[in-house]
Image 1: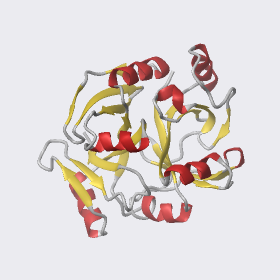
Image 2 (image 1 turned 30 degrees about the vertical axis):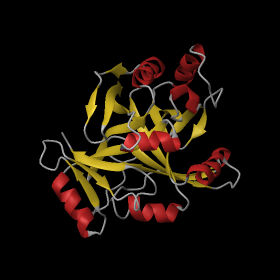
Image 3 (image 1 turned 180 degrees about the horizontal axis):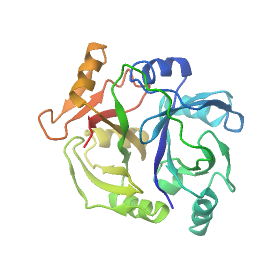
Image 4 (image 1 turned 30 degrees about the horizontal axis):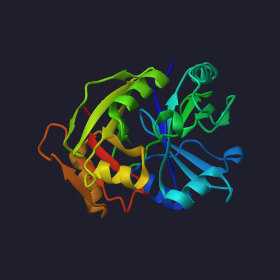
Length: 275
């Protein structure tokens, strides 16, 4: 029913300022761009080989994204799963009696869409999208990090087992084994939705990154990790461009780099090598 992560959305105060980072600095090309009146946003999709990042700027000062920015500031807004039949996916959600925002599919930038309420997914606002046109593949920007797709999307949760069961039920996800996540001093469970991965993170340590996030913001989207074609070159490029990176397991087989959050418009953004 769900094939992959289609995109993650970032709420920003200024589209042009956000594009200066995500397009001009990271090198993500702009695909579709439009004003979506019923959502009260100016939106742009920036595609990679597998998945896209969506930027959302308020067009309506009373709209949902404007209220989100007032309440939480810039940062991750929602997670979108792709489906070949959004009407069937919505019917499935109704059969589970999940709290919904949309009772019927409607047009959106990603195609025909419908939103579940965050209460359905441990604080994560989830969009379901059925693309109605072939994915755009604009010419890549010559400079940049060489992002090829999502490695994983991180979700902070207070109850790992319960969140894993929720994702398995709601999105037909397969659930991995619980383990330790040394990057965030937390426990984790990886759930696979189609060929994409969501990493659920839980921590009872209030001084750990995940514990601090849960105490401050509650459950929800914690961060995004992008795969890059050449990890060493991507980190070198960013540091030469003045974007600081915090390295985890630099000499490990799969190191992880966290970009300076002052530059990412509120997103916990990580890079890792392509497998």
